[in-house]
Structures are given as structure tokens and as C-alpha cells.
Length: 418
Image 1 (tube, rainbow, N blue to C red):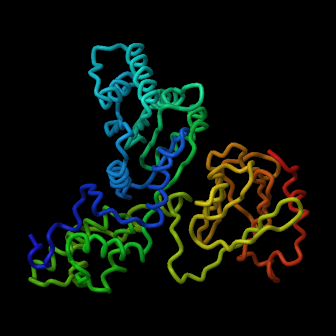
Image 2 (cartoon, one colour):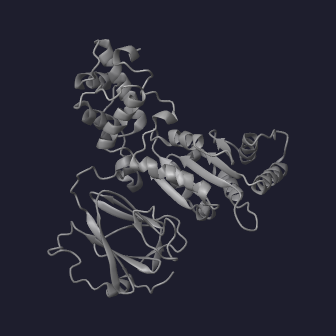
Image 3 (cartoon, one colour):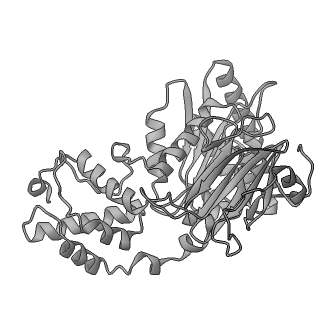
């Protein structure tokens, strides 16, 4: 292979999920933190979604590698199972041989095992990858497992990871009770242009580049154009490009090598391969590039007739909640730890409830998602969030100048409190 030519000690762009090569973008770091929260909190039930190749499995493997010894884990990767087979598979992961057991015996054994682990001071975690393939009946079994508890707390922590179809399935009316148990839902979006370049350099460094430039600077935009910031696609294109450079005995990958790889792979530009990441709000979100100046809008946070703060909205994601790890903290007992998020794109802005206790309200109606329009007021606990669209033609003056926040509640048509 090309290792000797490029002076590397291992292949930098293998497709296997190796935690050593994990690049923690802002999105990946947040997803990993949400996984870790299942250990911190006894009501941990977290859902992580992402496109094929977004890095979900690598994140899971990294998370598992860092777990302490007092955590007992069952990891399920085969998800096309019947309800009984699913429960048996969970027991197998915990060291049992349940294949002659009928469902009542399987459930009794699981309950007893979970209770024993809790009494022994151990935490039990169930991780299900490729969860979009779970049937509605199996997801109902997951809900039942999540309800096993002592007099004070839940005894099973759960992480579901899957493709965006998992969100579509969870939004079904048949799974309302399951979704109500979920504390956090997060979508792992693609890397930005800058993150893609950093991702490539990171993997080369882990493989032994020692800071040497192996990909010409001009190759990064082209790689992003055809791989779309999806880690698995970036790996495939970079590896093939290095083979092209190896074929001409060069230790520098040039634009011509990347073009040769694209031709060999027969790839069209990423935007023409799929439109899912363009039209689905949760899939299209990317953090604003460093130095970006595009401002889509602003939000004004008010309570009790007083303006508390203003925040600019640029393309990306802003998470609002009670704890300091949020992008915007609201210290109130009416606000959940991670209450809602505002997803901003160049042409739209969406607010979404993160399965909070008290919800979010627009025009006196509780909503799960709402596309924000200029002047909209959203009630969040005992606070009001007013959205100002900076692109609105009617904003002839600085939007919000002279606005009296005492009227925000009137605009929303709702009293304080939830």
C-alpha cells in the first residue's frame, strides 16, 4: 500500500469505526455529551440520529471505551428482530442463555437482573444501533423496559442510535408514550467545509503524518463538494485519492488526484446525490463557518415585562435550557435541562421542543416544532422568546427598537406559567 510513500504507520481513512481516529466536531462533541448524560442522570433515555456514515457508530465505540467499570452494557446491532427475540438478545448481552425461555420468563429474568445490578450499585445501559429498523412492537418493548424502576429511580438507561427514519417512526401516534420517556433527541449533522479539512488533517496526524502536509490546500474544497462533509464519504474519497497519488509515485495528493478518484468512483457532486439534507430541517443544519457574517435574525428573551437578553441567530443550532451546558441558559424551575432548540438556516428558522416537561407554546397552542416568522412570540416556561427576522423587508429600522416586552405575552395570547 501507500504507507511507506506517505511515511504513515497505519491507514488513515479506513471505514471501520476506530475510536482512535474520532474527530470531535461541535456536533459530535454534543452528541457524545448527550450519550454520557445517560450515565449522569437516572432518567437517561437519549436518541441520536444521523445520516449513513455520519459517525454514529464511531461515537458509540468511543463512548463505550471510556465507560467506568461500574457500568454494565448491552449493545444491540441486529435490530430486525421479533419482540421476544429482541428481549432474548438483550439477555444474551447480559450473559444469559435465554433461548428456551418464553416471553414471561425472559421479562422476569430481566427485571430480576436489573434490580440486582441496581442494589449492587452498578448502572445498566442498553445501546441499540441501527434503531430505525426496530418494529413498532419492539419499540413498545423498549418503552416497557425504560419503565422498570425502584421506588426512587429508573434502573435502565437507554441510547437509541439510527438514521433519520428513526425520527419519523418516533413521531408516529403509535409511539407517543415512548417519546414522552425520551429526555434528549439530537441529530448529528454533516461536517462543515472547515471541519472537513480539520477532519482530514486529524486522521492523517493520528496515522503518523506528524504535521506534514499530505493533501494540497486546494483539494479540501473539492473533497467537500463531492463528499458533502459525511465522514464515511470523506474517508472513501481521500483513500482513493491517496491511491491515485501513489500510482504516480507522489507523496502529495493534488487536485488532479482527487479528480481521478472522483472519476474512478463515478461520483456526482454531493448536492445532486441526495436532497434529504437540504430539505429536512434537522438534517441540513451546520454550524456557521468561522468568520461568517450572515445574520438571519435575533431573539429577545423577556420575563415579567422585562427584556433579559438578546441573541443573534446565524446558521446553526442554539440549544436553550436550564443547565450551563446549553448555548443559552434560562435559570428557572419551569425550564427543563435541555428545553428546546432553535435551528437556523440561511432561509428559515425553526424552534423545536426537546421533550421538555412544560413544552413550548405559540398562540396558546403547545407545539413540537414551529417555523418562526417575523414577530412570533414563543412561551417557554414563564419566559417569552420573540423572533426578529433580519431579512424581513419591513425591518426598515433596527428591529426591536422601542419594542415594549410587556406586550410579548399579549402577542402570544397566553398567561405566564405552564
